[in-house]
Amino acid sequence: MLENDISYIIRGLAFKIHSKIGPGLLESAYEAALAYELKKSGLQVRTQVGLPFLYDDIQLDIGYRVDIIVNELVIIEVKSVEMLLDVHYKQLLKYLKLSDKKLGLLINFNTADMNDSIKRIVNKL
Image 1 (cartoon, rainbow, N blue to C red):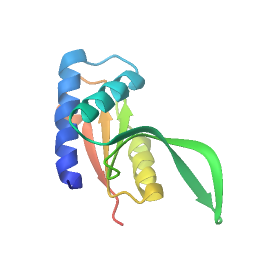
Image 2: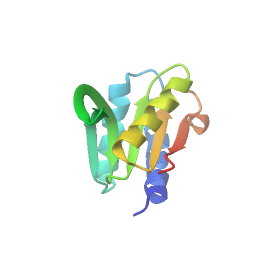
Image 3: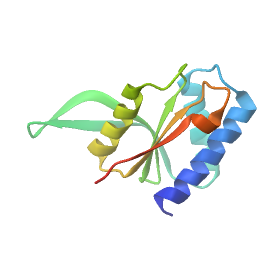
């Protein structure tokens, strides 16, 4: 399964979750629900994955955590904020670069309309 196929499934499940529980919960609730739905769909899911940070050829353990990695191909960054900011996009792009992944989805569940709240971020490897 390719990144675009996985992305399609993720989007559908994000819409399903949002229609069931709506906005207003903590990010951790949406992350848990999404991970559950992804696993139920037969995908490989890891949550709160530690991400190494290399500086000057030394690994520094500073606690970066990726919310969800699906099939070792797609990173999902879950948000529950009033509005997505530029820093959220930059954070996901940096996670993609640090992990050598190509595709990430930034999903904000704290919205009335999910159509504008799922953003694809591509790392041009």
